[in-house]
Image (cartoon, rainbow over all chains, first blue to last red; front, side, top):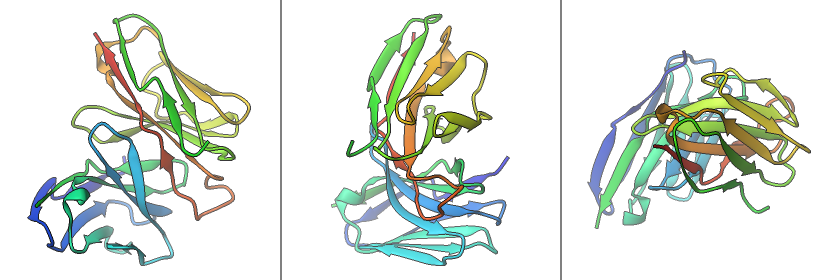
Length: 111
Length: 118
């Protein structure tokens, strides 16, 4: 079974701080990787999608990087805000037909 | 529609009863996926549709689970003789074309159906 690990499981930071969330996966032959956020009681919102040929993607204050050889991806959040508080999920696809999800990092940004 | 719509948003059912969960994907999205998220666990893949066919049913946990998709649009996930371990949030996602033809499209998820079996 493909494994996706996210560290840390939970993170609490003061507002304004830059932070990095980590995702690692066991098989480097990925098709693509996607970062999502999940707010309590709600579905998932796609943040960034990185194809296997790409090394990073940026959207606003978010930057996701991909290093296939080491089986890692990071999500960098700049100048964190209380509204960023959510669970962040990393998902890896090998075939495009399904994603393997990590268990997420629960982020709390303290005002 | 503008997004992926799932109904009902919440369902409480008695053990042993059958339930149907509905997913209405984004208009024009040919690929549709069902996942479930149990308390404290990650998302678990259930089934994938390309059009009306399901080339990948590998994630369905037992023969009590079935899914169908009609008209290349709405999908229904049916759980027969529900058990308490079926309690979870069932999430549906769609994507424009799926892997076969396009590499550039990720998922859009619905808000899920929270199923509680009592």
